[in-house]
Image (spheres, rainbow, N blue to C red):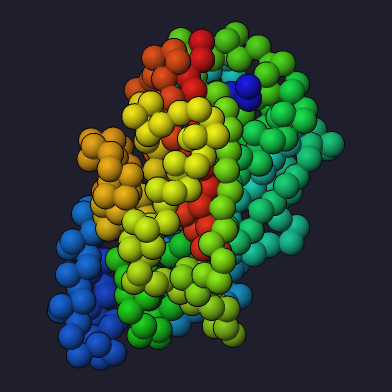
Length: 363
């Protein structure tokens, strides 16, 4: 089956500690919320310690037009996306040799936090030596589910073209969507959670000699995927697009929805693959927030320790939308897995939707 051979990141230049973010929110939102101190507890309770963003925090204290923020998105997405690709293709933790850009057959570009036509991967292809016939598949609008969905679409591509080497590049610059004059609770909670993240994964078809390329004794193969859309749930999560830009829509009911809705989806998916939750060794979950992680544990009745890596990523990087699950996957792959071990990737996003992947470590 198609294999995930390498994952790498490109870390944005500005680090912001959660205390800084809380003081920033207090300064900007105190006039809009009479109970600001009570609401600021979300910053303390979310178990995020630091995040990374592409602009210094003072940049966000001034009004910025949609065009100015989107231009900043394009500039940073190209530079960081380019670096993530280089880091992925030269990552000797995972690869026995560097992979040349000319070997890549397709690029899936995932984002929901900015817009560009030509899309970002086309701009990167003008700076790195990709073949002119490399296929481009930009995917926009999947939000936090986008990283898992990108892996799923790359899996399907590699099933159709088993000789292919494919990149999934996720760039989410959530900070650039910040609305300083939006006094909604969604914006305040978003400010406590979201961060910028960039990650790239290399997926190879089963005709590629993955054992020869992999520096690890085992590596995850994608066995199966499942995409699910909850009917009549478009108001749960997403963007409200206005003249000033992207305004976050973030329902407080998301943890409750997860508790009620996720387990039947997971159970159905695993049953179709003749497995049960007890067969899963690695739980690779997009950490949407501490309450979301708690909802995973409660809904699926799994040991809390299975979410430790997701919680670590949340603590050090925040919620980076679609890129976050690739950060979790990278750390799971660095630890390695025994041959035959199963992994379950799960991410939830606008729609309201779920993306699941079943992995199995091969050698």
